[in-house]
Image (cartoon, helix red, strand yellow):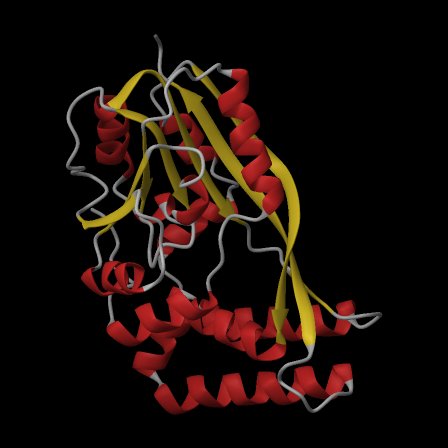
Length: 271
């Protein structure tokens, strides 16, 4: 059964503001894979579990039509309200029941999403809707992130790790699929032609305010917020105070970055 943790309107709004597209290095891996497989058609790409659309938009320049799908009506509404090219559309549907004809899709992407799906059912859908020689990329950022600012990365990362530790008691069990670097997802992909890359490194620029917003997009934090609202809000406030103390600046607009590792499972359906 798919896990539904991102459906509230408030959560969707925070998600739209603070989540990011797949970083450049990960995009390069995906596009290089398509080139290596000599994909002959760039008609239709589907971004499954697209949330509020961050990972959908970068496909628009490369495919004639791009469809983002998500089970959350609130997330899809945020995606529709945000600016997007004319060749991008959004549909509410489960990842395990995609509204596409058999053998009609050239490329499937799921970024920071597939670990929440009903994996066996989703993989059957991937096999059903992909064209022969169609490709799939299932990727995510990993949990070993660093919060970086000048020479204070170590102290800032400790603060991030403490935030993570206090929130993690509310993590869904499916987070463990990320902890194993998508090995289970790789094993489940029903194609012989597949690979798993676990050392894709990149960084995402933020402000301090942006980092705090990003923290609040985590499903475990949102669950914490519902269960213990005062404690969760206090955690954010204390994290803000400690970050500003370490960087020695009172401005929430101070630029920082999050360095992260990504994993990707890539597969190509037999021609």
